[in-house]
Amino acid sequence: MLSMDIHALYDLYLRHPVICTDTRRITTGCLFFALNGDNFDGNHFAQEALDRGAVKAIVSDSSLSGPDFIYTDNTLETLQALARHHRRQLKVPVLAITGSNGKTTTKELITAVLSTAFRTQSTAGNLNNHIGVPLTLLSIQPDVEIVVCEMGANHAGEIKLLCEIAEPSHGIITNIGNAHLEGFGSLDGVQRAKGELFDFLHQHNGFAFINIDDPRVRALGQALKHKTTFSLEASDHPDIHLIYIQEKDAGFALQNESGTVSIQTRMFGRYNAANMLAAYAIGLHFGVPQSKIETALAGFVSKGNRSEEVTHQNCHFVMDAYNANPSSMRLALQAFAEKHPHGWVVLGDMMELGHESQVHHAEIISLLGTLDFENVLLVGTHFSSALSTHALQDQRFRPYLKTEDLLAEWTWEACKGKTVFVKGSRSMQLERILKTE
Image 1 (cartoon, one colour):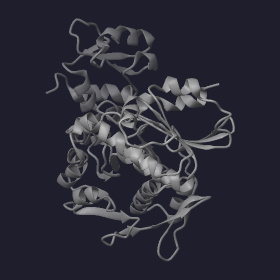
Image 2 (cartoon, helix red, strand yellow):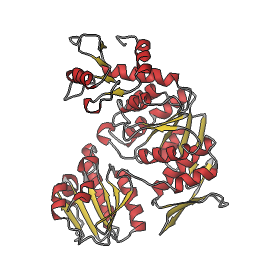
Image 3 (cartoon, helix red, strand yellow):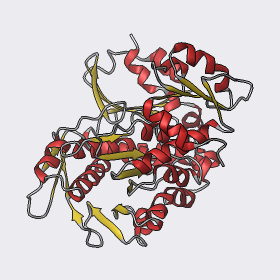
Image 4 (tube, helix red, strand yellow):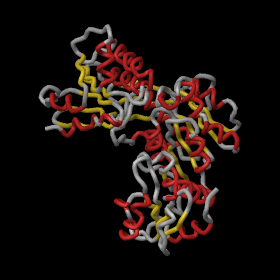
């Protein structure tokens, strides 16, 4: 239970509708929430926030007194309650998106499609957790017509909490895969956790978009009354079916049986086609003209180290280095092998896999052994350990314990004219390759 009047706080928010939680990003006239973490206490920075221009500081330290401090027992819960209250004043659809892989890319695709017909606001960057979702909601402008809200989680119950804050009217689960196994325990645990979004929609008469090519997503969606199903494989007679066509030069194309839909794109891989199909299905549901959907998807350019294509020092990179898990790694490698069968790959450790880490890294190594890449550079202790115990004897494989070790040996002359695929967990920071001299 909150120790303050949320209505009074909301009135203050309406007069000062900018929320800050970091004194390094204070904006004049904002409200500062003194959040606490494992290694910091935001209350210690409350006065600094005021000095930098915040009009009020919401704090949980009763020793901070004065007209510019507002006390509450728990600043995070108060932030979440304020976001929930604001969301309830919005008479617009809120589309929640979660899944093991492709959340952010799919969010950007959906936003690109919806923005052709509506004033659309979506999660900025990766603000998709218990702090980011409230900040996303509280940043929504009065003229916005549709909200696209990304939701991430690495433990059970987190999606449920985020749904209780954002109260989505619509939702999509991109897929269910081996991600954050350390927190979820197993693939079944991942399914239950991601399924918390569909549970909320089912309980609140919401609408779901269901990728029936993923058997676990399909199973989660069976109980929902209001839904649109989509598929690249035409399994179980989907509501929307587009055909995936691999094209060497243009990435891939999507079209239906009669050829009336044709989306050419520089992106490659069936997994990106599934992300585009999701955006296509959602655009149709909200009445976006098909021609606008096709144009938005064809013109989409991925950024932020998510299937981003970069040319540097006469070497072409496909940077997918924002994050990695066994499911996304496998799909991406297979797709890259189809388009660039003799390319290079630079792979970093996949984190948060718990006791199954060795098995999953070994499985990726086994997959790599079946592909014809010219060079395979493996970075991190998990990959190095798995390679040292693997029966594979292949001169193409080179292990590096740390990213720094790879960078020290990297030469631009060696990769001149090559296409290099780069993927690893965020902590590996493999994008630093582009900054080497």
